[in-house]
Length: 243
Length: 276
Image (cartoon, rainbow over all chains, first blue to last red):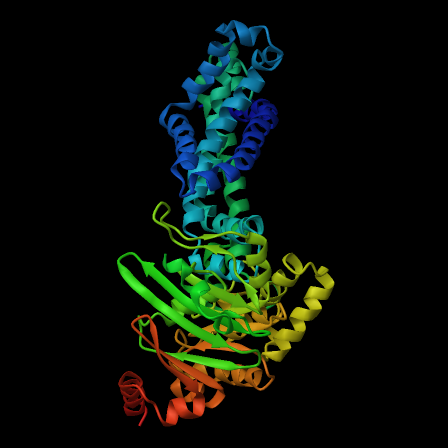
Protein backbone atom coordinates (compact mmCIF):
# COMPACT_ATOMS: atom_id res chain seq x y z
CA UNK A 1 0.00 0.00 0.00
CA UNK A 2 1.22 3.46 -0.94
CA UNK A 3 1.01 5.42 2.32
CA UNK A 4 1.84 8.71 0.70
CA UNK A 5 -1.00 8.27 -1.80
CA UNK A 6 -3.28 7.34 1.07
CA UNK A 7 -2.43 10.58 2.87
CA UNK A 8 -2.65 12.84 -0.17
CA UNK A 9 -5.96 11.31 -1.27
CA UNK A 10 -7.32 11.73 2.26
CA UNK A 11 -6.52 15.42 1.97
CA UNK A 12 -8.13 15.62 -1.46
CA UNK A 13 -11.25 13.74 -0.41
CA UNK A 14 -11.63 15.97 2.65
CA UNK A 15 -12.98 18.63 0.29
CA UNK A 16 -16.03 16.36 -0.07
CA UNK A 17 -16.78 16.52 3.65
CA UNK A 18 -18.87 19.73 3.49
CA UNK A 19 -21.25 18.27 0.89
CA UNK A 20 -21.54 14.99 2.81
CA UNK A 21 -22.31 16.91 6.00
CA UNK A 22 -24.78 19.26 4.34
CA UNK A 23 -26.68 16.36 2.77
CA UNK A 24 -26.72 14.31 5.96
CA UNK A 25 -27.45 17.11 8.43
CA UNK A 26 -30.06 18.86 6.31
CA UNK A 27 -31.97 15.65 5.72
CA UNK A 28 -31.69 14.72 9.40
CA UNK A 29 -33.14 18.08 10.42
CA UNK A 30 -35.92 17.90 7.81
CA UNK A 31 -36.58 14.28 8.75
CA UNK A 32 -36.75 15.16 12.45
CA UNK A 33 -39.10 18.09 11.89
CA UNK A 34 -41.40 15.97 9.72
CA UNK A 35 -41.26 12.98 12.04
CA UNK A 36 -42.51 14.72 15.19
CA UNK A 37 -46.06 15.46 13.99
CA UNK A 38 -46.11 12.21 11.97
CA UNK A 39 -45.12 10.20 15.06
CA UNK A 40 -47.97 11.71 17.09
CA UNK A 41 -50.39 10.83 14.29
CA UNK A 42 -48.88 7.36 14.06
CA UNK A 43 -49.21 6.87 17.83
CA UNK A 44 -52.86 7.95 17.69
CA UNK A 45 -55.47 5.40 18.70
CA UNK A 46 -57.59 6.45 15.73
CA UNK A 47 -56.92 4.10 12.80
CA UNK A 48 -57.92 6.64 10.17
CA UNK A 49 -55.17 8.87 11.50
CA UNK A 50 -52.43 6.30 12.09
CA UNK A 51 -52.88 4.11 8.99
CA UNK A 52 -51.93 6.71 6.33
CA UNK A 53 -48.72 7.41 8.27
CA UNK A 54 -48.06 3.68 8.53
CA UNK A 55 -48.47 3.40 4.75
CA UNK A 56 -45.81 6.09 4.28
CA UNK A 57 -43.30 4.59 6.72
CA UNK A 58 -44.01 1.09 5.40
CA UNK A 59 -43.14 2.07 1.83
CA UNK A 60 -40.06 4.12 2.69
CA UNK A 61 -38.65 1.61 5.16
CA UNK A 62 -39.48 -1.36 2.95
CA UNK A 63 -37.65 -0.22 -0.18
CA UNK A 64 -33.96 0.53 -0.71
CA UNK A 65 -32.91 4.13 -0.39
CA UNK A 66 -31.03 3.79 -3.68
CA UNK A 67 -34.24 2.80 -5.45
CA UNK A 68 -36.06 5.76 -3.90
CA UNK A 69 -33.29 8.07 -5.05
CA UNK A 70 -33.42 6.70 -8.60
CA UNK A 71 -37.21 7.01 -8.73
CA UNK A 72 -36.97 10.64 -7.69
CA UNK A 73 -33.97 11.53 -9.88
CA UNK A 74 -34.62 9.50 -13.03
CA UNK A 75 -38.31 8.67 -12.63
CA UNK A 76 -40.02 11.97 -11.83
CA UNK A 77 -38.48 13.61 -14.91
CA UNK A 78 -40.49 11.22 -17.08
CA UNK A 79 -43.75 12.74 -15.95
CA UNK A 80 -44.75 15.59 -18.25
CA UNK A 81 -46.68 17.52 -15.70
CA UNK A 82 -43.64 17.68 -13.40
CA UNK A 83 -41.33 18.60 -16.29
CA UNK A 84 -43.56 21.51 -17.15
CA UNK A 85 -44.05 22.73 -13.58
CA UNK A 86 -41.80 24.92 -11.46
CA UNK A 87 -40.93 21.79 -9.48
CA UNK A 88 -38.73 20.79 -12.36
CA UNK A 89 -36.13 23.41 -11.47
CA UNK A 90 -35.67 21.59 -8.21
CA UNK A 91 -36.13 18.00 -9.35
CA UNK A 92 -33.64 18.11 -12.21
CA UNK A 93 -30.90 19.03 -9.77
CA UNK A 94 -29.19 15.95 -8.25
CA UNK A 95 -28.56 17.79 -4.97
CA UNK A 96 -32.24 18.56 -4.36
CA UNK A 97 -33.24 15.06 -5.46
CA UNK A 98 -30.80 13.51 -3.01
CA UNK A 99 -31.93 15.82 -0.23
CA UNK A 100 -35.57 14.95 -0.93
CA UNK A 101 -34.92 11.20 -0.97
CA UNK A 102 -32.78 11.26 2.17
CA UNK A 103 -35.23 13.50 4.06
CA UNK A 104 -38.28 11.38 3.24
CA UNK A 105 -36.39 8.21 4.11
CA UNK A 106 -35.05 9.61 7.36
CA UNK A 107 -38.46 10.97 8.32
CA UNK A 108 -39.95 7.49 7.85
CA UNK A 109 -37.41 5.79 10.12
CA UNK A 110 -37.46 8.57 12.71
CA UNK A 111 -41.26 8.53 12.79
CA UNK A 112 -41.30 4.89 13.80
CA UNK A 113 -38.56 5.39 16.38
CA UNK A 114 -40.41 8.38 17.84
CA UNK A 115 -43.70 6.54 17.90
CA UNK A 116 -42.11 3.89 20.11
CA UNK A 117 -40.75 6.61 22.38
CA UNK A 118 -44.12 8.34 22.63
CA UNK A 119 -45.92 5.13 23.50
CA UNK A 120 -43.28 4.38 26.15
CA UNK A 121 -43.91 7.60 28.10
CA UNK A 122 -45.37 6.44 31.44
CA UNK A 123 -49.10 7.30 31.60
CA UNK A 124 -48.56 8.85 35.03
CA UNK A 125 -46.47 11.65 33.46
CA UNK A 126 -49.42 12.54 31.25
CA UNK A 127 -51.87 12.22 34.15
CA UNK A 128 -49.83 14.79 36.05
CA UNK A 129 -49.78 17.15 33.06
CA UNK A 130 -53.53 16.80 32.57
CA UNK A 131 -54.25 17.19 36.26
CA UNK A 132 -52.43 20.53 36.33
CA UNK A 133 -54.58 21.80 33.45
CA UNK A 134 -52.16 21.72 30.50
CA UNK A 135 -53.64 21.85 27.00
CA UNK A 136 -53.03 18.81 24.76
CA UNK A 137 -50.41 20.81 22.85
CA UNK A 138 -48.61 21.79 26.05
CA UNK A 139 -48.65 18.17 27.19
CA UNK A 140 -47.02 17.13 23.92
CA UNK A 141 -44.45 19.91 23.78
CA UNK A 142 -43.41 20.12 27.41
CA UNK A 143 -43.89 16.59 28.70
CA UNK A 144 -44.39 13.84 26.12
CA UNK A 145 -41.87 14.99 23.49
CA UNK A 146 -38.92 15.68 25.84
CA UNK A 147 -39.43 12.40 27.70
CA UNK A 148 -39.87 10.45 24.46
CA UNK A 149 -36.78 12.02 22.88
CA UNK A 150 -34.57 11.14 25.83
CA UNK A 151 -35.86 7.60 25.63
CA UNK A 152 -35.13 7.16 21.94
CA UNK A 153 -31.77 8.93 21.90
CA UNK A 154 -29.72 5.71 21.54
CA UNK A 155 -31.87 4.53 18.60
CA UNK A 156 -31.79 7.98 17.08
CA UNK A 157 -27.98 7.93 17.09
CA UNK A 158 -28.21 4.81 14.93
CA UNK A 159 -30.38 6.71 12.47
CA UNK A 160 -27.87 9.59 12.38
CA UNK A 161 -24.97 7.22 11.69
CA UNK A 162 -26.95 5.26 9.10
CA UNK A 163 -27.89 8.41 7.23
CA UNK A 164 -24.37 9.77 7.31
CA UNK A 165 -23.17 6.62 5.58
CA UNK A 166 -26.18 6.40 3.27
CA UNK A 167 -25.36 9.88 1.96
CA UNK A 168 -22.66 8.12 -0.11
CA UNK A 169 -25.50 7.06 -2.42
CA UNK A 170 -25.63 10.64 -3.67
CA UNK A 171 -22.51 9.76 -5.66
CA UNK A 172 -24.70 7.62 -7.94
CA UNK A 173 -26.52 10.72 -9.14
CA UNK A 174 -23.26 12.56 -9.93
CA UNK A 175 -22.79 14.46 -6.65
CA UNK A 176 -19.16 14.91 -5.60
CA UNK A 177 -19.37 14.28 -1.90
CA UNK A 178 -16.75 12.03 -0.28
CA UNK A 179 -17.69 8.89 -2.22
CA UNK A 180 -18.31 10.76 -5.47
CA UNK A 181 -14.91 12.39 -5.23
CA UNK A 182 -13.31 9.00 -4.50
CA UNK A 183 -14.78 7.49 -7.62
CA UNK A 184 -13.60 10.43 -9.67
CA UNK A 185 -10.12 10.17 -8.18
CA UNK A 186 -10.00 6.41 -8.77
CA UNK A 187 -10.86 6.86 -12.43
CA UNK A 188 -7.98 9.32 -12.70
CA UNK A 189 -5.34 7.39 -10.73
CA UNK A 190 -6.41 3.75 -10.99
CA UNK A 191 -5.59 3.30 -7.29
CA UNK A 192 -8.90 2.14 -5.80
CA UNK A 193 -7.30 0.51 -2.76
CA UNK A 194 -5.71 3.62 -1.18
CA UNK A 195 -8.44 5.99 -2.23
CA UNK A 196 -11.41 4.02 -0.94
CA UNK A 197 -9.52 3.33 2.30
CA UNK A 198 -9.02 7.08 2.58
CA UNK A 199 -12.77 7.55 2.06
CA UNK A 200 -13.48 4.94 4.73
CA UNK A 201 -11.20 6.76 7.18
CA UNK A 202 -13.07 10.02 6.60
CA UNK A 203 -16.47 8.37 7.20
CA UNK A 204 -15.12 6.70 10.32
CA UNK A 205 -13.91 10.06 11.59
CA UNK A 206 -17.30 11.67 10.97
CA UNK A 207 -19.28 8.90 12.63
CA UNK A 208 -16.93 9.01 15.63
CA UNK A 209 -17.51 12.72 16.04
CA UNK A 210 -21.30 12.24 15.90
CA UNK A 211 -21.29 9.25 18.24
CA UNK A 212 -19.26 11.04 20.90
CA UNK A 213 -21.33 14.19 20.48
CA UNK A 214 -24.52 12.28 21.15
CA UNK A 215 -22.90 10.44 24.03
CA UNK A 216 -22.13 13.78 25.65
CA UNK A 217 -25.74 14.82 25.15
CA UNK A 218 -26.92 11.55 26.64
CA UNK A 219 -24.65 11.94 29.65
CA UNK A 220 -25.92 15.43 30.21
CA UNK A 221 -29.58 14.45 29.93
CA UNK A 222 -29.61 11.08 31.57
CA UNK A 223 -26.96 11.33 34.25
CA UNK A 224 -25.58 14.59 35.42
CA UNK A 225 -27.38 16.81 37.87
CA UNK A 226 -25.89 20.21 37.01
CA UNK A 227 -26.27 21.86 40.39
CA UNK A 228 -25.70 18.87 42.62
CA UNK A 229 -22.83 16.54 43.40
CA UNK A 230 -23.43 13.26 41.59
CA UNK A 231 -23.86 10.11 43.68
CA UNK A 232 -20.84 7.79 43.65
CA UNK A 233 -22.24 5.20 41.28
CA UNK A 234 -22.68 7.73 38.52
CA UNK A 235 -19.22 9.22 38.89
CA UNK A 236 -17.73 5.74 38.54
CA UNK A 237 -19.80 5.11 35.43
CA UNK A 238 -18.58 8.32 33.82
CA UNK A 239 -14.95 7.43 34.36
CA UNK A 240 -15.61 4.04 32.83
CA UNK A 241 -16.97 5.75 29.70
CA UNK A 242 -13.83 7.80 29.54
CA UNK A 243 -15.72 11.02 28.99
CA UNK B 1 -82.02 6.57 30.86
CA UNK B 2 -79.78 6.33 33.87
CA UNK B 3 -78.26 9.66 32.92
CA UNK B 4 -81.56 11.23 33.82
CA UNK B 5 -81.16 10.08 37.39
CA UNK B 6 -79.44 13.17 38.71
CA UNK B 7 -81.99 15.54 37.27
CA UNK B 8 -84.82 13.54 38.79
CA UNK B 9 -83.41 14.08 42.26
CA UNK B 10 -85.10 16.74 44.38
CA UNK B 11 -83.61 20.18 43.80
CA UNK B 12 -82.26 20.41 47.35
CA UNK B 13 -80.15 17.32 46.75
CA UNK B 14 -78.51 18.44 43.54
CA UNK B 15 -78.13 22.15 44.21
CA UNK B 16 -74.41 22.53 44.77
CA UNK B 17 -73.08 24.07 47.92
CA UNK B 18 -70.90 27.16 47.67
CA UNK B 19 -67.70 25.19 47.20
CA UNK B 20 -66.20 21.77 47.52
CA UNK B 21 -67.26 18.78 45.50
CA UNK B 22 -70.58 17.07 44.96
CA UNK B 23 -70.75 13.76 43.16
CA UNK B 24 -74.05 12.08 42.26
CA UNK B 25 -74.64 8.64 40.83
CA UNK B 26 -71.10 8.12 39.57
CA UNK B 27 -70.79 4.88 37.62
CA UNK B 28 -67.73 3.53 35.88
CA UNK B 29 -67.12 0.29 34.09
CA UNK B 30 -63.59 -0.72 33.10
CA UNK B 31 -63.73 -3.71 30.78
CA UNK B 32 -66.14 -6.15 32.39
CA UNK B 33 -65.73 -4.83 35.90
CA UNK B 34 -68.16 -2.36 37.40
CA UNK B 35 -65.66 -0.29 39.36
CA UNK B 36 -68.12 2.37 40.53
CA UNK B 37 -71.79 1.53 41.02
CA UNK B 38 -73.47 4.80 41.79
CA UNK B 39 -71.30 6.80 44.14
CA UNK B 40 -72.80 9.81 45.91
CA UNK B 41 -70.37 11.84 47.94
CA UNK B 42 -70.02 15.46 49.08
CA UNK B 43 -67.07 17.39 50.34
CA UNK B 44 -67.80 20.83 51.72
CA UNK B 45 -65.27 23.64 51.40
CA UNK B 46 -62.73 23.43 54.20
CA UNK B 47 -63.54 19.81 54.88
CA UNK B 48 -60.98 17.01 54.90
CA UNK B 49 -62.49 13.78 53.65
CA UNK B 50 -60.65 10.50 54.03
CA UNK B 51 -61.73 7.69 51.70
CA UNK B 52 -60.88 4.22 52.95
CA UNK B 53 -61.49 0.81 51.47
CA UNK B 54 -59.69 -2.32 50.43
CA UNK B 55 -57.85 -2.58 47.12
CA UNK B 56 -60.23 -2.70 44.19
CA UNK B 57 -63.06 -0.99 46.05
CA UNK B 58 -63.02 1.85 43.51
CA UNK B 59 -61.71 4.64 45.73
CA UNK B 60 -58.84 5.68 43.45
CA UNK B 61 -61.06 5.52 40.38
CA UNK B 62 -63.59 7.72 42.14
CA UNK B 63 -60.91 10.26 43.06
CA UNK B 64 -59.75 10.36 39.42
CA UNK B 65 -63.33 11.09 38.39
CA UNK B 66 -63.30 14.32 40.41
CA UNK B 67 -60.79 15.99 38.06
CA UNK B 68 -61.86 13.82 35.13
CA UNK B 69 -58.59 11.95 34.62
CA UNK B 70 -61.09 9.11 34.44
CA UNK B 71 -64.40 9.98 32.80
CA UNK B 72 -67.41 8.59 34.60
CA UNK B 73 -69.85 6.60 32.46
CA UNK B 74 -72.82 8.08 34.30
CA UNK B 75 -73.45 10.65 36.96
CA UNK B 76 -72.92 14.30 37.74
CA UNK B 77 -70.07 16.18 39.38
CA UNK B 78 -69.98 19.71 40.68
CA UNK B 79 -66.64 21.27 41.58
CA UNK B 80 -66.68 24.60 43.43
CA UNK B 81 -70.36 24.79 42.54
CA UNK B 82 -69.76 24.34 38.81
CA UNK B 83 -71.42 21.44 37.02
CA UNK B 84 -68.91 19.56 34.81
CA UNK B 85 -70.25 19.20 31.31
CA UNK B 86 -69.92 15.59 30.24
CA UNK B 87 -71.66 13.32 27.83
CA UNK B 88 -72.40 10.00 29.51
CA UNK B 89 -71.99 6.61 27.88
CA UNK B 90 -74.81 5.94 25.44
CA UNK B 91 -75.95 3.07 23.30
CA UNK B 92 -74.44 4.37 20.06
CA UNK B 93 -71.14 5.61 21.48
CA UNK B 94 -69.11 3.49 23.83
CA UNK B 95 -66.99 6.18 25.48
CA UNK B 96 -68.09 9.04 27.71
CA UNK B 97 -66.87 12.44 26.55
CA UNK B 98 -65.86 15.84 27.78
CA UNK B 99 -68.15 18.46 26.24
CA UNK B 100 -66.31 21.57 27.36
CA UNK B 101 -62.53 21.18 27.33
CA UNK B 102 -61.91 24.76 28.48
CA UNK B 103 -64.09 24.21 31.50
CA UNK B 104 -62.34 20.97 32.35
CA UNK B 105 -58.89 22.56 32.06
CA UNK B 106 -59.95 25.48 34.21
CA UNK B 107 -61.40 23.17 36.85
CA UNK B 108 -58.36 20.87 36.77
CA UNK B 109 -56.06 23.86 37.29
CA UNK B 110 -57.99 24.66 40.46
CA UNK B 111 -57.55 21.11 41.82
CA UNK B 112 -54.16 19.89 42.98
CA UNK B 113 -53.56 16.17 42.65
CA UNK B 114 -50.90 14.04 44.31
CA UNK B 115 -50.38 10.57 42.91
CA UNK B 116 -49.32 7.26 44.40
CA UNK B 117 -46.26 7.03 42.15
CA UNK B 118 -45.37 10.78 42.44
CA UNK B 119 -45.37 11.25 38.62
CA UNK B 120 -42.74 13.97 38.67
CA UNK B 121 -41.52 14.86 35.19
CA UNK B 122 -38.06 13.30 34.98
CA UNK B 123 -36.55 15.84 32.57
CA UNK B 124 -37.23 18.76 34.89
CA UNK B 125 -35.56 19.72 38.14
CA UNK B 126 -37.62 19.87 41.32
CA UNK B 127 -38.07 23.63 40.86
CA UNK B 128 -39.00 23.25 37.18
CA UNK B 129 -41.57 20.59 38.11
CA UNK B 130 -43.13 22.96 40.62
CA UNK B 131 -43.09 26.10 38.44
CA UNK B 132 -44.16 24.49 35.12
CA UNK B 133 -47.88 24.68 35.91
CA UNK B 134 -47.83 28.31 37.06
CA UNK B 135 -45.97 29.31 33.85
CA UNK B 136 -47.91 27.21 31.33
CA UNK B 137 -51.37 27.20 32.83
CA UNK B 138 -51.60 30.22 35.12
CA UNK B 139 -49.46 32.36 32.78
CA UNK B 140 -47.09 33.66 35.42
CA UNK B 141 -43.75 35.07 34.29
CA UNK B 142 -40.83 32.68 34.68
CA UNK B 143 -39.42 34.81 37.43
CA UNK B 144 -42.64 34.95 39.42
CA UNK B 145 -43.19 31.21 38.93
CA UNK B 146 -39.67 30.39 40.11
CA UNK B 147 -40.21 32.53 43.17
CA UNK B 148 -43.51 30.79 43.84
CA UNK B 149 -41.86 27.42 43.26
CA UNK B 150 -39.10 28.16 45.77
CA UNK B 151 -41.68 29.23 48.31
CA UNK B 152 -43.57 25.94 48.02
CA UNK B 153 -40.41 23.85 47.96
CA UNK B 154 -39.46 25.58 51.21
CA UNK B 155 -42.90 24.77 52.57
CA UNK B 156 -42.32 21.04 52.04
CA UNK B 157 -38.79 21.37 53.45
CA UNK B 158 -36.87 20.93 50.19
CA UNK B 159 -35.33 24.33 49.49
CA UNK B 160 -31.93 22.71 49.07
CA UNK B 161 -33.20 20.33 46.36
CA UNK B 162 -34.51 22.94 43.91
CA UNK B 163 -31.88 22.05 41.29
CA UNK B 164 -32.09 18.27 41.72
CA UNK B 165 -33.67 15.96 39.21
CA UNK B 166 -36.30 13.52 40.49
CA UNK B 167 -34.01 10.51 39.99
CA UNK B 168 -31.63 11.91 42.59
CA UNK B 169 -34.36 12.30 45.21
CA UNK B 170 -35.68 9.68 47.60
CA UNK B 171 -39.31 8.57 47.26
CA UNK B 172 -40.32 10.72 50.20
CA UNK B 173 -38.58 13.76 48.74
CA UNK B 174 -40.17 13.13 45.34
CA UNK B 175 -43.61 12.98 46.88
CA UNK B 176 -42.98 16.22 48.77
CA UNK B 177 -41.93 17.89 45.49
CA UNK B 178 -45.14 16.53 43.97
CA UNK B 179 -47.11 18.10 46.82
CA UNK B 180 -45.29 21.41 46.23
CA UNK B 181 -46.15 21.12 42.52
CA UNK B 182 -49.83 20.75 43.40
CA UNK B 183 -49.69 23.64 45.91
CA UNK B 184 -47.97 26.02 43.46
CA UNK B 185 -51.16 26.11 41.40
CA UNK B 186 -52.79 27.57 44.56
CA UNK B 187 -55.67 25.12 44.22
CA UNK B 188 -59.01 25.30 45.99
CA UNK B 189 -59.06 21.54 46.45
CA UNK B 190 -56.35 18.92 46.95
CA UNK B 191 -56.72 15.28 45.92
CA UNK B 192 -54.36 12.68 47.37
CA UNK B 193 -54.38 9.25 45.72
CA UNK B 194 -52.68 6.85 48.15
CA UNK B 195 -49.76 9.25 48.54
CA UNK B 196 -47.72 6.99 50.80
CA UNK B 197 -48.47 3.55 49.32
CA UNK B 198 -45.38 3.48 47.08
CA UNK B 199 -43.01 4.62 49.83
CA UNK B 200 -40.63 2.63 51.98
CA UNK B 201 -41.97 2.55 55.54
CA UNK B 202 -39.27 4.86 56.89
CA UNK B 203 -40.19 7.54 54.32
CA UNK B 204 -43.94 7.59 55.03
CA UNK B 205 -43.61 9.86 58.06
CA UNK B 206 -42.09 12.86 56.26
CA UNK B 207 -44.93 12.90 53.71
CA UNK B 208 -47.65 12.49 56.34
CA UNK B 209 -46.12 15.35 58.34
CA UNK B 210 -46.38 17.67 55.33
CA UNK B 211 -49.98 16.58 54.75
CA UNK B 212 -50.87 17.08 58.40
CA UNK B 213 -49.49 20.62 58.21
CA UNK B 214 -51.65 21.28 55.12
CA UNK B 215 -54.70 19.90 56.90
CA UNK B 216 -54.14 22.47 59.63
CA UNK B 217 -54.47 25.33 57.11
CA UNK B 218 -58.19 24.82 56.50
CA UNK B 219 -57.71 23.46 52.99
CA UNK B 220 -60.29 21.29 51.27
CA UNK B 221 -58.78 17.84 50.83
CA UNK B 222 -59.87 14.42 49.62
CA UNK B 223 -57.46 11.72 50.72
CA UNK B 224 -57.55 8.15 49.51
CA UNK B 225 -55.31 6.26 51.88
CA UNK B 226 -54.50 3.01 53.64
CA UNK B 227 -53.07 4.86 56.63
CA UNK B 228 -56.00 4.47 58.99
CA UNK B 229 -54.29 6.11 61.96
CA UNK B 230 -53.37 9.13 59.82
CA UNK B 231 -56.88 9.36 58.35
CA UNK B 232 -58.35 9.29 61.82
CA UNK B 233 -56.04 12.06 62.96
CA UNK B 234 -56.46 14.57 60.13
CA UNK B 235 -59.86 13.99 58.56
CA UNK B 236 -63.07 15.74 59.52
CA UNK B 237 -65.20 13.25 57.63
CA UNK B 238 -64.54 9.79 56.32
CA UNK B 239 -66.09 7.41 53.83
CA UNK B 240 -65.69 3.68 53.41
CA UNK B 241 -65.95 2.24 49.91
CA UNK B 242 -66.76 -1.35 49.17
CA UNK B 243 -67.34 -2.92 45.75
CA UNK B 244 -67.88 0.39 43.99
CA UNK B 245 -70.26 1.90 46.52
CA UNK B 246 -69.99 4.11 49.58
CA UNK B 247 -70.85 1.70 52.33
CA UNK B 248 -70.58 4.15 55.16
CA UNK B 249 -69.75 7.80 55.64
CA UNK B 250 -69.88 10.24 58.50
CA UNK B 251 -67.95 12.48 60.79
CA UNK B 252 -64.56 11.05 61.60
CA UNK B 253 -65.36 10.70 65.26
CA UNK B 254 -68.39 8.50 64.63
CA UNK B 255 -66.84 6.74 61.67
CA UNK B 256 -63.76 5.47 63.46
CA UNK B 257 -65.04 4.95 67.01
CA UNK B 258 -68.50 3.69 66.24
CA UNK B 259 -68.66 2.12 62.75
CA UNK B 260 -72.16 1.04 61.79
CA UNK B 261 -71.64 -1.27 58.82
CA UNK B 262 -70.19 -4.77 59.24
CA UNK B 263 -67.84 -4.12 56.30
CA UNK B 264 -66.22 -1.10 57.92
CA UNK B 265 -66.06 -2.87 61.29
CA UNK B 266 -64.17 -5.74 59.66
CA UNK B 267 -61.89 -3.33 57.80
CA UNK B 268 -60.99 -1.36 60.94
CA UNK B 269 -60.59 -4.53 63.00
CA UNK B 270 -58.23 -6.00 60.43
CA UNK B 271 -56.24 -2.80 60.50
CA UNK B 272 -56.03 -2.77 64.32
CA UNK B 273 -54.80 -6.36 64.26
CA UNK B 274 -52.02 -5.52 61.81
CA UNK B 275 -50.83 -2.63 63.91
CA UNK B 276 -51.10 -4.04 67.43
